[in-house]
Length: 250
Image 1 (cartoon, one colour):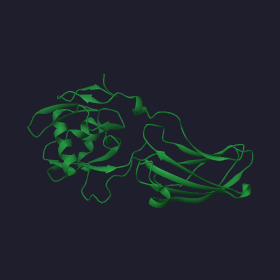
Image 2 (cartoon, rainbow, N blue to C red; image 1 turned 135 degrees about the vertical axis):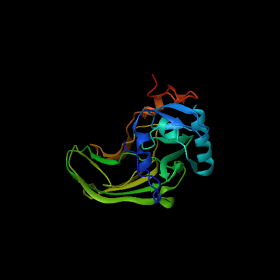
Image 3 (spheres, rainbow, N blue to C red; image 1 turned 120 degrees about the vertical axis):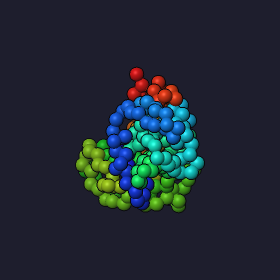
């Protein structure tokens, strides 16, 4: 999954760091001048309490506390995670990562966010074509107790005709993220109106589907598969930057 556009409004360029983002293995020089061999872990979600190289721990600690870490040396964190595809995770909190360069200063930023997911789709399992009027509201929280109807915002409102046995994604270019959702679905031909509430969350596959079954009932279903990171070993590095556990470790 292509992650997302990060931190809108950041005005400095990231181009100067492009070289250090492309390789799986590299060498960085920490603030103390020590050369660190770095190997990248392939998880989409990396815990902030993972066993990072010492130099990366320093960068992360400052960035978590202040939102940004700056140095005139090479950054270590972009060498050990793919900052375009990886989120840092602390329990139920997620952080997006961005690196940038301004003059001689290399900068590492993190910002609390909710990761992107795949679009919600609507599937018609009946034997006839039907038109669905769908309204989806979204609340940017993973709290199951939230009232999405009163605390959420409108995400999708559209009418879509779905052929029998087919599936159509909802929202076009709408950006779906982890959080709480509520949908109201109407099918005029069936005099049917119903509502569904669900949570998008990383432990499961990210493609949710609103379905009309053969009995003309509407329900929401999530693909019952664990996210690959749910079974993957946590990342772990030595202080020298060698990846000893997690996707990509030898």
